[in-house]
Length: 269
Image (cartoon, rainbow, N blue to C red; front, side, top):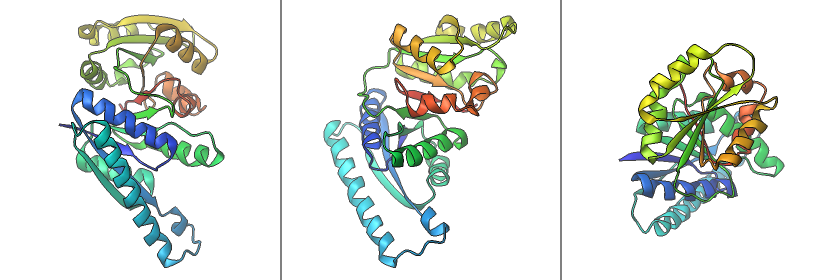
C-alpha cells in the first residue's frame, strides 16, 4: 500500500490538506501518516526557553495529532490506515528523514496562509521542502475539496526535456487514470522541435494532448490555461533546467505553489 505523509502544523491550510489527502487516499488505496515537527529553531537561535515549554508543546501536538487522526478515520469511514508521528527538530530535515525511512508516494502540504505568520512559516517550509525533498510534494489550496482528478497538466518550456521525470509523470497519470495535457510555455524564440519530439515519443503511451502558449507572465499564463481547460492538478518540475528552474529564482513557481489556483504536485528529477 502506498503511503502519503501529511505535514501537519494544525493551521487551517494544513488541516484542509489532511482532509484532501484522506479523500485522495481512499481513491488510490493509500495509507496516511500525519507527521508533525515540534520546531526547535528557537533553541538553536539561543533564546532562553523554560524547560516545561517544550513539554507542553509535545503534549499539545500529540493531542492535536490524535484529534486529526480521529477526524480522518471518521471522514473515511475507517477505509484507510491513519497513523501519527511527532518529532522535535527542524521541519524539512525531519521530513527528509521520515521520507527516506518510509519512502512515501508523496508529501502533502497546505498552501500558504493569508496571515503574516503563515506567509513566513508555511511559505518557507513548503518552498524549502519543494527544493530539497527527493519525493513528490502536493501543495493544496486552503479552500480546495478533493474531487476525482480527471485532467492533469504538465507545464514546461520544452528545453532540456531529457531531465523531466517521465516515469514519475506516467505513474501519477496512471494512478489517477487521468487525461494528461502538456503545456509548452514559450519563453523565447528558441527552436524546440527536437525537445518536443522527445516528449511526444516518451509519453506516447499516455496519449497526452499538447498545447502551446506564449505569455509574458508565466504564472498568469499557467493560471489562465488552468481555468480555461478545467484542470484538476498541475504538475511542476522545479529542479529541472526547464521553465520552472529558470523562473524558480524569480519566485514564479514558488508563488504558484504558495497561492495555487488548484492543487499542485512538484516532481523531483
